[in-house]
Length: 453
Image (cartoon, rainbow, N blue to C red; front, top):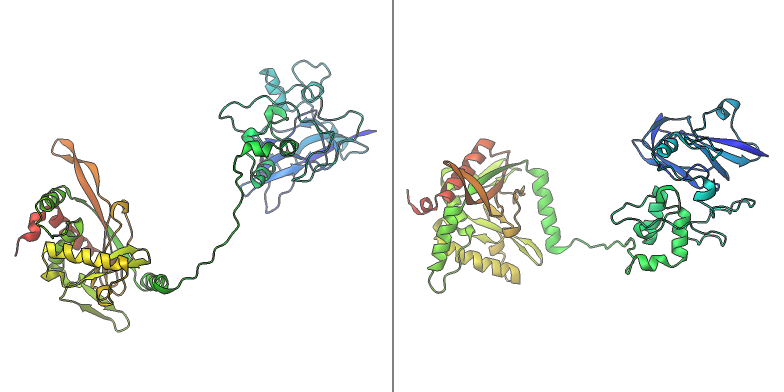
């Protein structure tokens, strides 16, 4: 005796009243087993799979993919052995057939529409001749990771076109990812070449995973514990102190350094023997000296415990440098008394000392304002962290050629951003902008750097 089983949209919980049907895993006429995934629905919180409550045969599929279905609405009807759960009203649900009612298996409304377009799946008797043995009870479902039963024979699949996305349920995709299988290489036996769990099991049992990947990808669950000690711990402590105690304000300005780069190239070409090669930093340091004379509050250290700002006459510029041991800030002392070439020589000496570990304590302490630069890796914009207890840091971003409008046309110019941060407790935004604008004016007309007041 055969009965009818109605499967309704389940109550997914959390106040969800409806869900969208996103995948059909079966077609009308399919023989299914208990717990086999029939469909997948999606709420605004998660994707949920709907399993078969018992063995049976699909005789009706309700909504089309993409339809929103209310909780409790019938979505699937199955023919089962024994009594089903369908009430008389539910058994009267319309059964859609193909355009020609020739006694073939009923179809869902979506399948009927596809039939009119000539793309509907064939009836079960011809579409899946080996999917089930007519007079035998369907086999128990295979456990994940195991080979399919001996009487399972996957249906030959139409070759998947290049770039075609394999169709599979979330459960099949998750299992394939766990075992390192590329689903593009797995033939599908269901409608529209969809890959079922049986297809995946058969592919694994046939040794297909070896062909799928020459080197299988596996999940790496290792955890490498690295204790923060020494310089790295000191850096961490200082950065945490700076961010927790200093309310930062960051100001970014674009600077045309075309003229500066031309001057730098000429000076390097004519430099005498023994003189270091000039980079942009000595020019920036000289410009900062001029700007600080006008705004001495930038060259300061803030004792926030005593509520005292110590403004320094001597300009001791720290230059953040990345080393194999971590971030260091060697300090060029009394930049106000150094020439452009002196700055370049001291920068070179300190950089080497920081890299080879010979920098003295005096070389790494006493800064009153800091420059940070990542060189060619500098990006377009950064948000520098102030070197506590200083009140300002000037960040150099990478140089790039950009089109700039001049008079009646665009011309290529070498542009660079300065991304600079200030302690907003003692430096107002207006003062920060004035400071950077003064540096900008000097770098854009570099001859002004060398003209004494």
